Structure formats: C-alpha cells, structure tokens
Length: 130
Image (cartoon, rainbow, N blue to C red; front, side, top):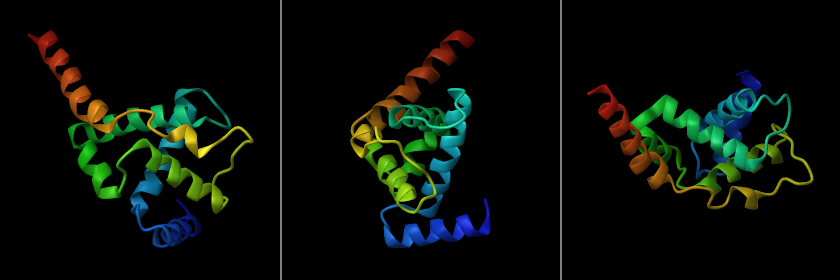
C-alpha cells in the first residue's frame, strides 16, 4: 500500500480504536480478493464481501482465524461493515445508493463458520485420506 493510504488507515484506526490497522488492511485485501472471486471490476455488495472475507480468512489463517479476528477487534460481521463504512467516510471506498451498513448485520456466526465449520471440513479431509 501507499504511504498515504497507510497514514490514513492509521488515522482512521486512532479515531475508531475498536479495530486494529491490520483489520482495515485485511478488509481492503478481502475486497480485492472478492472482486476477483466474483469477477467484478467495480462494486461488490456487503454479503458478497463477507463471503470473500470468510474464504480469505480461512485460506490465510485456518484454525487461527478466530484468534486473529479477536486481536483485530472484529467480533461479528457487523464489525466488517463498520470498517467498510469508516473507509467510505474517508473516501477510500465508495458506495452505491443501495449500500447500507445493515447488509453486514448477522450475516454469519463466527463461531459456527470459523470454529465448528473449520473442524467439520478438516474432519472430512482427514476421513478422505484414510
């Protein structure tokens, strides 16, 4: 990232200290990942971004995902929305008329997806290896 963007993220993180700077950086990375995944040049919806976030978290952090999210200050999908809208407020990201922070509320449960869901996937992989 550019130094200007790094400085802006640092400023945003200081203003809204619920989330670490790394959380903002990850959300921007997840946005890029999601655009590629959904083959979009421009806009993705909140639920689409959250799907990309989920997939990228599992790919990058696997069983440590909940620990990383907790460290970043992210407890639920609404927190991703708060980060996105903080970035929109600072004009790092843009939004359409249809975009609403409510689209990020309770989309999926972190424990279910990143703990129990991860263990289920791992169990299936191990079973297939036998």
